[in-house]
Length: 117
Figure 1 (cartoon, rainbow, N blue to C red):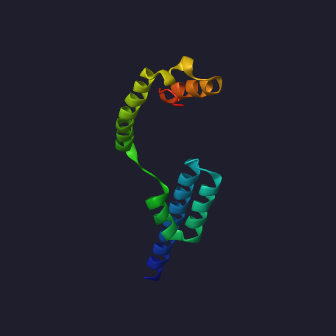
Figure 2 (figure 1 turned 90 degrees about the horizontal axis):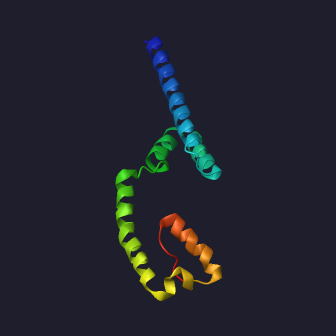
Protein backbone atom coordinates (compact mmCIF):
# COMPACT_ATOMS: atom_id res chain seq x y z
CA UNK A 1 0.00 0.00 0.00
CA UNK A 2 2.87 2.31 0.76
CA UNK A 3 4.27 1.72 -2.74
CA UNK A 4 0.96 2.86 -4.27
CA UNK A 5 1.10 6.12 -2.30
CA UNK A 6 4.68 6.65 -3.39
CA UNK A 7 3.78 6.13 -7.06
CA UNK A 8 0.70 8.32 -6.74
CA UNK A 9 2.78 11.08 -5.12
CA UNK A 10 5.38 10.91 -7.88
CA UNK A 11 2.68 11.02 -10.59
CA UNK A 12 1.00 14.02 -8.98
CA UNK A 13 4.35 15.77 -8.62
CA UNK A 14 5.13 15.08 -12.29
CA UNK A 15 1.68 16.35 -13.30
CA UNK A 16 2.21 19.49 -11.23
CA UNK A 17 5.60 20.24 -12.81
CA UNK A 18 4.28 19.57 -16.32
CA UNK A 19 1.36 21.94 -15.68
CA UNK A 20 3.66 24.66 -14.35
CA UNK A 21 6.04 24.20 -17.30
CA UNK A 22 3.16 24.28 -19.79
CA UNK A 23 1.63 27.44 -18.36
CA UNK A 24 5.07 29.07 -18.17
CA UNK A 25 5.65 28.34 -21.85
CA UNK A 26 2.21 29.78 -22.67
CA UNK A 27 2.97 32.97 -20.74
CA UNK A 28 6.34 33.40 -22.46
CA UNK A 29 5.06 32.70 -25.98
CA UNK A 30 2.16 35.16 -25.68
CA UNK A 31 4.77 37.94 -26.07
CA UNK A 32 3.15 40.44 -23.74
CA UNK A 33 4.91 43.32 -22.05
CA UNK A 34 7.77 42.20 -19.84
CA UNK A 35 6.15 43.42 -16.62
CA UNK A 36 2.90 41.60 -17.37
CA UNK A 37 4.69 38.33 -18.13
CA UNK A 38 6.83 38.52 -14.99
CA UNK A 39 3.79 39.33 -12.86
CA UNK A 40 1.91 36.29 -14.18
CA UNK A 41 4.95 34.06 -13.66
CA UNK A 42 5.27 35.27 -10.07
CA UNK A 43 1.59 34.54 -9.43
CA UNK A 44 1.94 31.08 -10.97
CA UNK A 45 5.05 30.22 -8.92
CA UNK A 46 4.01 31.77 -5.60
CA UNK A 47 0.44 30.45 -5.64
CA UNK A 48 1.01 27.13 -7.41
CA UNK A 49 -2.42 25.72 -8.22
CA UNK A 50 -4.42 28.90 -7.61
CA UNK A 51 -2.00 30.86 -9.85
CA UNK A 52 -2.43 28.43 -12.74
CA UNK A 53 -6.22 28.56 -12.42
CA UNK A 54 -6.15 32.37 -12.19
CA UNK A 55 -4.00 32.60 -15.32
CA UNK A 56 -6.24 30.28 -17.28
CA UNK A 57 -9.34 32.23 -16.19
CA UNK A 58 -8.08 35.82 -16.43
CA UNK A 59 -4.69 35.81 -18.15
CA UNK A 60 -5.73 34.94 -21.66
CA UNK A 61 -8.35 37.02 -23.38
CA UNK A 62 -10.14 34.73 -25.77
CA UNK A 63 -12.39 37.27 -27.40
CA UNK A 64 -12.76 35.22 -30.54
CA UNK A 65 -13.94 35.78 -34.04
CA UNK A 66 -17.45 36.81 -33.00
CA UNK A 67 -16.07 39.88 -31.27
CA UNK A 68 -14.01 40.81 -34.32
CA UNK A 69 -17.08 40.53 -36.57
CA UNK A 70 -19.10 42.72 -34.18
CA UNK A 71 -16.33 45.31 -34.08
CA UNK A 72 -16.28 45.53 -37.88
CA UNK A 73 -20.05 45.81 -37.98
CA UNK A 74 -19.95 48.60 -35.38
CA UNK A 75 -17.28 50.51 -37.30
CA UNK A 76 -19.13 50.54 -40.62
CA UNK A 77 -21.77 53.22 -39.69
CA UNK A 78 -19.02 55.46 -38.34
CA UNK A 79 -16.98 54.93 -41.47
CA UNK A 80 -19.95 55.94 -43.65
CA UNK A 81 -20.54 59.01 -41.51
CA UNK A 82 -16.90 60.03 -41.76
CA UNK A 83 -16.99 59.64 -45.53
CA UNK A 84 -20.09 61.83 -45.63
CA UNK A 85 -17.96 64.55 -44.03
CA UNK A 86 -16.06 64.83 -47.29
CA UNK A 87 -19.10 66.63 -48.73
CA UNK A 88 -18.47 69.40 -46.22
CA UNK A 89 -16.06 71.99 -47.71
CA UNK A 90 -14.04 72.30 -44.49
CA UNK A 91 -13.04 68.62 -44.61
CA UNK A 92 -11.79 68.41 -48.18
CA UNK A 93 -8.08 67.63 -48.46
CA UNK A 94 -7.23 70.81 -50.40
CA UNK A 95 -8.77 72.91 -47.59
CA UNK A 96 -6.74 71.24 -44.83
CA UNK A 97 -3.78 73.30 -43.61
CA UNK A 98 -0.20 72.11 -44.03
CA UNK A 99 0.17 70.87 -40.44
CA UNK A 100 -2.92 68.64 -40.71
CA UNK A 101 -2.20 67.28 -44.17
CA UNK A 102 0.09 64.52 -42.88
CA UNK A 103 -2.44 63.49 -40.23
CA UNK A 104 -5.11 63.33 -42.94
CA UNK A 105 -2.94 61.04 -45.08
CA UNK A 106 -2.22 58.84 -42.07
CA UNK A 107 -5.94 58.51 -41.26
CA UNK A 108 -6.70 57.61 -44.87
CA UNK A 109 -3.91 55.04 -44.99
CA UNK A 110 -4.70 53.39 -41.62
CA UNK A 111 -8.48 53.27 -41.38
CA UNK A 112 -9.67 54.74 -44.67
CA UNK A 113 -11.40 57.82 -43.26
CA UNK A 114 -10.56 61.51 -43.52
CA UNK A 115 -9.21 63.48 -40.63
CA UNK A 116 -11.62 65.91 -39.03
CA UNK A 117 -10.28 69.33 -38.07
